Length: 128
Length: 124
Image 1: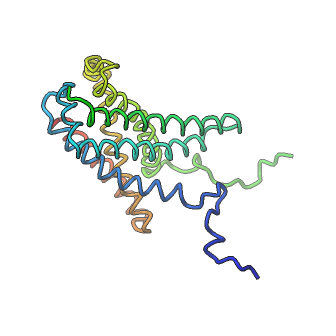
Image 2: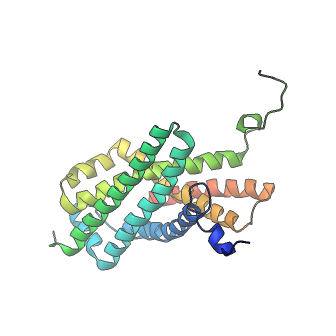
Image 3: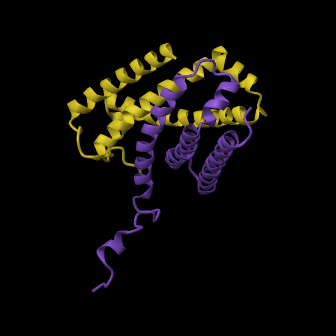
């Protein structure tokens, strides 16, 4: 007889030892992006000229800056999960596959960090 | 060793191509297109923030014929991925799995994505 609870036995199961994390986070970020994406399209549609000065002011509003940071992180997260599945399906050979998966993660984290820094600069730095 | 008579498991190629398969592969293709779009999105933010990649250049490229085609493609990809994504969430709840429902919702998604893309493109 095992003393482990049924819950502890299923936690972290699956071939990648991550349980349902990939699946679940894909759904969570999907719902978040549904909201963020529609906000972005509506908000960006209200602009007039799309020149740098106007966009700088727009992105600098605290609410917009917060939404842009959330957008960057959530997009990168959702995109990593999606590209990971594509790599797993189409890239073969252990070395090539692992390299592609690592590159996928690194590139997405880099993109997210760069985007967050850009938004912080706009929101906290001097006005243009 | 090989025995041609041996039964093989059915694969994609033995089926007549149904609309649901088009939606399935389009979901993946638009998703990947949007991942590429994420790079453009970040470059756009960098251009606004620092002007290192001059915003004027970014503006010019995005207003060229090629840039406009890319933007239109990303817009369609966004709406398609969004609509089909919502169907995936509904599928997760166990609904809409009947063959007739899957086919009907497929067409609804294609029409919605095209209409939304057209409306947004013309309005903005």
